Image (cartoon, rainbow, N blue to C red; front, side, top):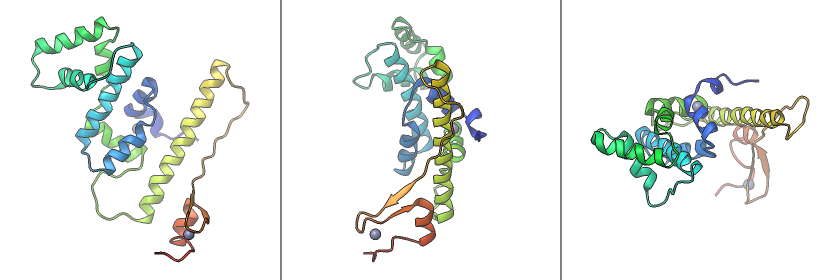
Length: 198
Ligand SMILES: [Zn+2]
Ligand SMILES: [Zn+2]
């Protein structure tokens, strides 16, 4: 069951190609912590730059990716300084044009949060069980489709062999007070755990 969002989103394509693992969780966490879409844009793009630098064997300590990111993108940076930053990357085997091509805008980050992760970005104060179902459902289908694609890639390299793989992710929630366990949707249906709430 191919999810139609998988083909289109630039965040997904770049994250997969650059090997940015767990980036979705980190974006969602940062959003939940109150960061702005512009903050997330910079966070994602710096991760892209850092991945390119790491892949080329460059040092990524001491805020170097952040500094280079600023030099590559900040409007207040002089053309000379930008050219210096690009040359520094080139000398170390990183193609700055390819990296900048992979940068995303905050609008793209917003679309990714909304459509791929099921995270609303309206900063609404109301959050319902239906929203919760929607959020988790999208993440589950996404995990299933990414897992399936990963299996197919492994099959393509000959590292794995399976005729007709089908991936199912199920989310279970346990209460450590009483040790009862529920599927996510049964928990929402029931309105809570059966043990007396605090
Ligand atoms: Zn996406
Ligand atoms: Zn309980």
